[in-house]
Amino acid sequence: MAPMTPNQANTTLVHQPSARLQFGHARADITPPANIYHPMWGAARHHRATGIHRPLYGDIMVFSTVEGDTWAQVQLDMVGLGNEHHTQFQTTIAQAIGIAVENVILAYSHTHAGGFFLLNRVDFPGGELILPYLDEINAKLSHTAAHAATALAPVTATFRYGRSDMAANRDFWDDENNLYACGYNPNAPADDTVLVARFTQDSGKSDSGKPDSDKLVATLVNYACHPTSLAWENTLISPDYVGALREEVESQTGAPCVFTLGACGDLGPRRNHQGDTAIADANGRQVGFAALAALEGMDPPGMAFAYQGPVISGATLGTWQPVPLPTDAAQATTVARGGLQQVDLPQKPVPDAATLEAQMQDFLQKQADADAAGDPVAARNFGAFAERARRWLGRLPTLSTDPTYRYSFSVRRMGDSVWVALQGEPYNWLQRELRRRFPSAAIVCTVMAGQMGVAYLLPKDRYGVGLYQEEPSSLDRGCLEQLYAAVVEQIEALGVPATDQ
Image 1 (cartoon, helix red, strand yellow):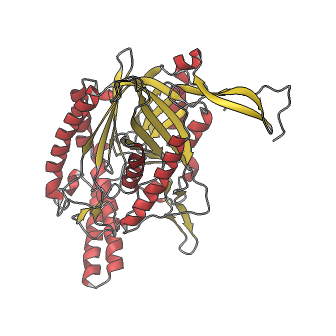
Image 2 (cartoon, rainbow, N blue to C red):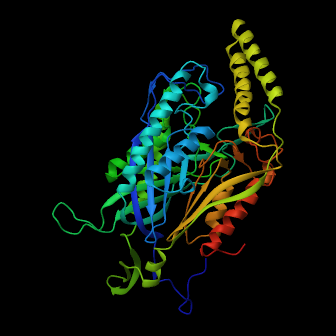
Image 3 (cartoon, helix red, strand yellow):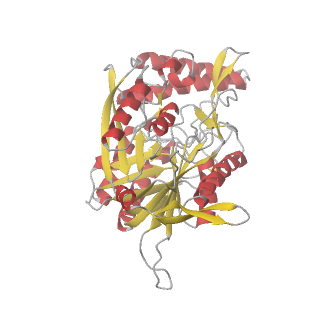
């Protein structure tokens, strides 16, 4: 880059994205019974969990503006839920807060080690505990949501990007077997962005009775990486890397840390698919350290960083200091609007239920034959194929035979930040492009924010090449690009400045 010349304009004031609004948070322990139905992995041979690695949490964040617009974002340490319980939980939370159901964003960390609680699992060993457990969580979420609403207080939210290379691309081409394997791919770059938010109270009293305007009440970490450190050999209930991430941040800040999963359809941990929980903890600490570094680099709440002029010393030094935000920038932090949106996306033909049922029964018989023959690898493989058919059968009632799917998503502007909540598991391209298109805004991109039915959203050039993600996806080529265009349209309508195409 060529050096600046005296005739070029220079930047003398910078400020990190921030927002001013009302915020309340509360947390529930949602750890299931230690012997509940557990496996999310087709290769697993166990049914019941054998213990607890770390607790699972449900975090409820309530936001409110001076105009009285109130909404909630809920993060559950679960892989996801069926439509029945997803809707039930949303309704319960909405009633407890006193808001419309469409103003409740219910999202999942997508940990693959937290248990698998769909209705077609209740007849398996450990499945008898699923419905009582979900009823218990429903009651807990009602109490927790009410508590979060009563905790509403004025805050300044400050946002900063950090970096962690824990996540890696996971579309690996296996030359020897002539196929794509879903695992660490060292041959492609991965998004290493960690977005951190810091929520500090704007007013209040410290123990001494003096104003305490910088009291930290919560942090948020938004990171794109499948929680798949642990896989089929693990039999413990676990939040995967999210647990150690939160613990590390909370131990240093003394405030709750909320995790939201970013767009990670093609991203997973470099160290993944393990049975050792120490790997999950190490992965979590790696991201936690990056989040703490971002927090340490933040300016004070409501402040910008301004050039103060030269000081003659051994050199002529340029000095910078925090200063209050200029009036126009401060006013922009109070803007808050947006909400639920919908777009029609192309849908693949829905599989035939009778064909899926026949395939599942055939694979189950082959698994039994392989077990009887003493071939555990073949038995594991046949069981995995049966599980793929079982999952499709469980999703069929949620899908229509229409050529398009009515896809729901949420876009909200909060000051200098934009919160995007998406169904399913979009490829990371969407998140990167949004942040490139709107560089002045902090883009909080949360996925698994809705019903599980759609599964993956791939870029159109990744369809038809043999990737695993295409097989469970109910959406067709072009879905990701159309979703991106719809999200961009909504963000621009909220007045967020964009770069050129």
